[in-house]
Length: 308
Image (tube, rainbow, N blue to C red; front, top):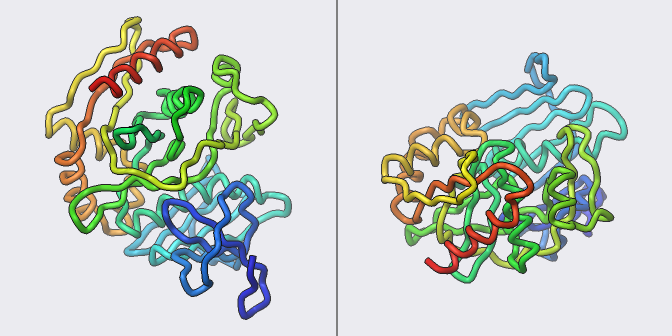
């Protein structure tokens, strides 16, 4: 850790291939060394003025060209700008951990959109052929599948939010995100996940946050994107999506898509989504619901991916 000109202790961390200089404690992130002038993102603790009106849920946001604000009642306010800065304003003492949930989720998603990443509601793992993204709604099993792959020796690149960077040569890149996973208690039990590493998440219902030790040093080009479709059938079925279906599905499963639209990125996001659909194989996977089918589903998906 280094000190800036105001003698504030600054942490140096790495996520999504971005060098992060932070004035607030981020114990979940991977530390790294770089010169202060090399930072891609600065996270500061400072007052955030906002006119956002509270909602019944206690969470509200506002987006305009190149800027984003987030308000979480009794936790914190966030301001995200320029793709390189996040300001955090705590609203009550002892709320640092709750604030980091929103920092690593919505606030960082807004920053990645500002940097023109394709931000997917997906967990992703690293295979010998490249990265595989598991896209779906909350409860569709994205984190569960990624954790199941991890138990079988695969590295998890991201949990719940996967960013794809559009490269100069027209390809995409999946950088490692945060070394965290969020799993339900029955999944932890079924996968025999180390309970000692799990902390309950008060803001996420029955989920637990756990350290993910398999985060790799480097990312990979995406090999395929899988859209999860829970079903009552006990068989795992794969269907390749048509180009039109692929683009529509990618837009629907963009993480915090309304943030991107509000910040003025609708057109550029859509064009980039078309390029992604052209570049990567995209499938729909129907799989049975329920813990008793979990291991069989994981083995079938591994067989499909590795045998393709």
